[in-house]
Amino acid sequence: MTFIAENIQTLLNCGFLAVGLLLVFVPICKHVGIVDKPDKRKVHVGNIPLIGGFCIFLTSLIAVTYAQSFGYLSLLILGTGSLIMLVGIVDDLADVDPKIRLLLQFLITAATAHFFGLQIMTLGTLFGLPLSLNLGIFSLPFTVVVVVGVTNAFNMIDGCDGLAGSLSLLAICAIAFLGVQPPEPEMSLLMLSLCAGLLVFLCFNIPAVFTFKVFLGDSGSLFLGYAISWMLIYSFERVKSIEPSFALWIVLIPLFDFLYVFITRLKVGRSIIQGDRSHLHHCLISLGFTHQKTTALIFMMSLLLLMVGLFFERVYPSLGLPIIGLLFILYFYGRICVADKTSTS
Image 1: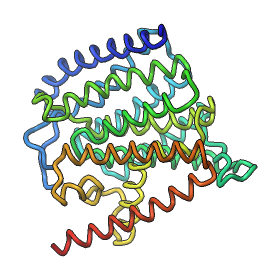
Image 2 (image 1 turned 45 degrees about the horizontal axis):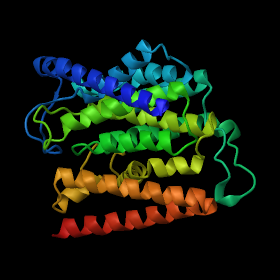
Image 3 (image 1 turned 60 degrees about the vertical axis):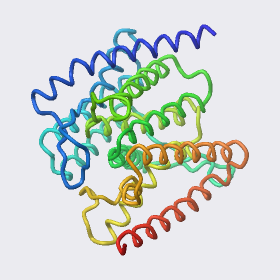
């Protein structure tokens, strides 16, 4: 009971901190013009401050610093994550060339994996085979591709009120509660502070709750995807709290959306890093769903898939990856059918 009470108190303290940071920085953003303006790809009304992600990051940084709980994982995520955040902030302000932004992400991730010595060394026991698949010399490049891929998957799905924030919250809670309990104290504080910041952000992001509205910004969605990817790698490589195959279930919807967009853009010869309206949330909105209903539906899909993944991980672990492959084929086919329908209607 003491452990639960202490965590609730930490969550509340971080939540109040996040509220205070938002109240301070929102007027500043409006004054200096750090806002998201409507355009042909964005359907929101008015100029919305792009400060949500920075306040989430700052909440964790202050909480960890105050508790003097800086350790390996906190330094990795908050230290190198600040560079990812900086790339996003510059992009929010000046629309950085996507190629340059991607190159910077690769360089930061490669340097992080090398100097912190945290890499995906094995893919675990795939398909129920008794031996694990070791990556050897491919460990570093594979790690970099995975981290950059997950980072951009969360960035790309950030196009609907509350969507990237709620999926990030779900992913962090899954890492915290579905692994070996209790999590490490350092990891626990980091995740609690991120969750508190996300919960407060969602209250300021969903129109039905507050008119004092904020967005994550590219800085926020990139940082959250970056943080989640490293927490997953740390969980299955260092503390062994989850299996590598289960990590896919935790980020399955952003991953499916990312792969679908990647494949379809390659197919038509369009730049894979140039934004468009081919994402899952755009698809649902084109079918008549509101932003709130789109977010709720995708969140429930993610939660359901997470439960399905947990079932296979605990009962039929050898079937986890084949089921993911089958689900992606069905997802891809369904998206193609909906795209054809909406284009002809």
